[in-house]
Image (cartoon, rainbow, N blue to C red; front, side, top):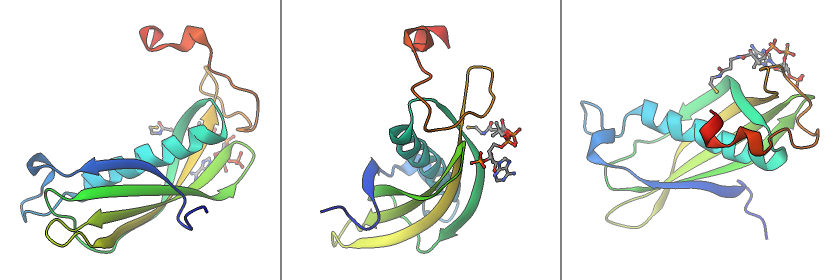
Length: 137
Ligand SMILES: CC(C)(COP(=O)(O)OP(=O)(O)OC[C@H]1O[C@@H](n2cnc3c(N)ncnc32)[C@H](O)[C@@H]1OP(=O)(O)O)[C@@H](O)C(=O)NCCC(=O)NCCS
């Protein structure tokens, strides 16, 4: 049965390098993971280049600490012609208790683009080909 918050798209361990001056994990690190999670989800809806056009909302509900396993789930909140709005929820497994805590919730709008950086319908056939391999970036 599908999880109500969607598939797990990313799972990471927070490291000492991720902390801010208070010793908790820097919000920008979490935001970077959220951006990646939204991309991973968008890519399942169309094999294209995708860019983030807007972070519609981000709520830091609770802090994340070093050494915690952070799980990001993503689901489709809305679709347009070229865009997909992705809801990303972030849960941290507390290091000492193993309890899962909801730490961040975000809504991110992604746009499918072609090689000329023009928006394209995300439901169009794949626009990535062998010529788009990493060596051609
Ligand atoms: C995303 C981008 C290609 C859109 O270009 P554009 O000329 O505005 O394109 P359009 O007007 O055709 O809009 C394309 C889609 O983006 C949405 N969009 C554009 N600007 C938006 C904004 N400011 N807020 C929310 N949605 C926006 C439109 O609603 C449309 O969605 P739809 O087709 O599903 O209705 C362009 O804004 C861009 O390149 N932005 C930078 C992306 C980037 O570098 N991101 C960071 C790294 S990934």
